[in-house]
Image (cartoon, rainbow, N blue to C red; front, side):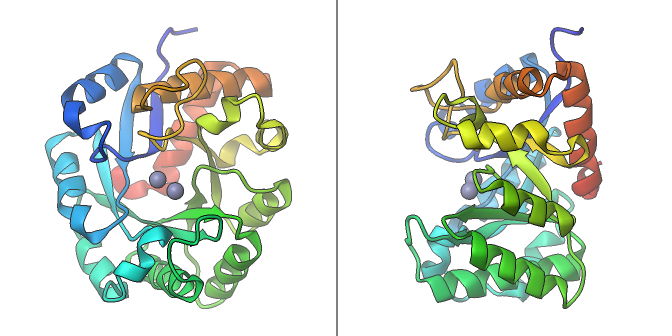
Length: 262
Ligand SMILES: [Zn+2]
Ligand SMILES: [Zn+2]
């Protein structure tokens, strides 16, 4: 077993407070633990340039373009055309994060849904995958994903997965991937652990969602992409797979889904 199998952090926020102040060292520490690729996720229009600049500067960092559901109220002007235009950049490899968050309800639910649909339309136009955030909104998330699938195929990932096993199965049936974050290492996450243990390995991704959600044994610290190694090891142990097997599979899955980054 190699000490540092190649891993991919499929979802991080390198330009957020907590990581931006020390970004060069954050990237160094990730690389030192075998994190060979990171996907830097956009959440609001004002950060698109910064998120992309990091990806232009760093060969192992890629970018997305999108509006987080929390931010939907503030971005009524960001439509499919605007997303498609920005997604043409060679370092932008995905659309999101988008989706529905009925836990915080920071934006009006109708606006969240409209924004979600405009992101999916951008995926259909560009052929790029969708990055879905969903919290306390399983039913509406699935209904929109299914309805939009009827208008034409698109692919994507349910990021920082915490939903039910039934939701995971339905998303996989639609062709989606499931990305597991550090939450899976939390003692309280028994349901998530049970689901993550049985998901097909050819649909799994791993992520940090850093600077949030530091996995065990880093809880209480600011999370960073290097810690995806801890989450991957925990997940591999739990699933009875070697870390090398899990690392190879999740990296291959990432390259299949985010094929523009290959
Ligand atoms: Zn999210
Ligand atoms: Zn995120």
